[in-house]
Image (cartoon, one colour):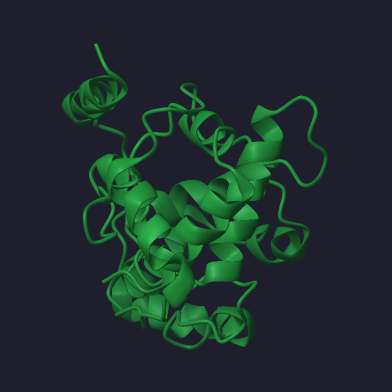
Length: 212
């Protein structure tokens, strides 16, 4: 069974067993609650600061998991800890519904990184065991909402690059830096990012910024 087949099998299992009770989000209520988020992420979720993620168009399932992971400490984002601490499940669901209803503003891919970035995103690297990003995040970066796999298309290059480096650091015992481990029991992102070269990482991050 190859890597792509394994991923498809895992996704199908997740979809078949998906029955987690979540509060129903109200986008209109979320719009009012999103005022506190606007300074860093933009009023409509399109952050103007490259190190802060764009939230516009992100699927609710992924958004809710990440906020809860930050609240619990499973994902360490110091700047967010105090902000999310007072959010209720309903608040989080409403914010997820609001940002998910917005449209992300797509950026540009660097010309010199386009070919390599496209290759890694769409086909991976068979020689080093890097799985195609499109297998979980969709051909146009739309993600898999039902499985909770995030939308990536249009996300800031700097933010994607930082997250890939954090996953890579978590998957490599000999690499220091910020580590991110909240990618589930399969540790798929740690595994994939751990096999990326520096140039591949930069290229795919740039490609994602211009993906739509």
